[in-house]
Length: 114
Image 1 (spheres, helix red, strand yellow):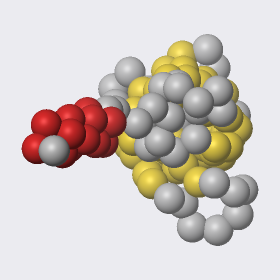
Image 2: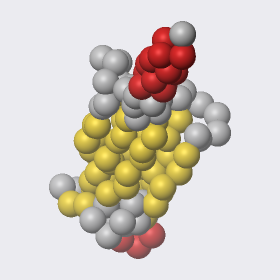
Image 3: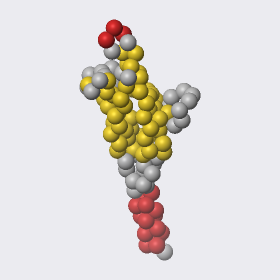
Image 4: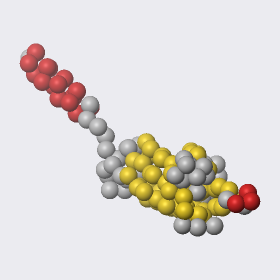
């Protein structure tokens, strides 16, 4: 009887400790471009719809890149805003679907601003 209980507990522990794929396990690397060059330090907003407050916000680095991780599967809307010469605003948007296949998904997305 004790052997069965131990086997049952070990089986439960083995299955409960497995990594859950596709659940908050996805990421997006965003590249912001203006006139075929990186747009450094742009503000990048991430949301699940095209209106309303963003879920998350990142500041692009000197290479115009930002990284969002621990994302659930779904469709995401990205918006980038930065400034170019003479403080002129540059804006762009992109839409990405991630994690729809059930496994880990890493997406590289480029936002072209104007």
